[in-house]
Length: 178
Image (tube, rainbow, N blue to C red):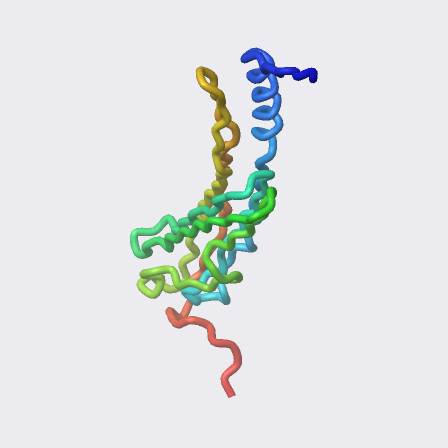
């Protein structure tokens, strides 16, 4: 009876692990889609805002989310902050996650203090957003040699300018009154 013993050299193992690591590191992708950011009607304190983060990985665990802060260049107004992050786990390899920030889009949120802005004023405002995704991390090893694959993290961010107008009468425009 012939028996053969196969011994994997540490160099061969390390080479395979490095190759797997490079392929796995390239597996995480992310994109962000901001909503149209605008004031709802002339004179209203409501702002339509939000963004969606799309993340994808070849691994089975994924975390994605982001933050936002809408503010105006005015001492009268405050800001509208928000954040949301969600985890996802699949039993098979590969995972896709869509996260809307805030939870429901389109979101209509009120700019704090806008009612105190003097009538006839136009404010320059900014919607600043961030997005982030991270895949799971796995360790592969044999005694004396080990390598970690995965764990890649992506971040993105930007800002969108918009204007808020306070109507000339000091009262929000409410359309036609019958």
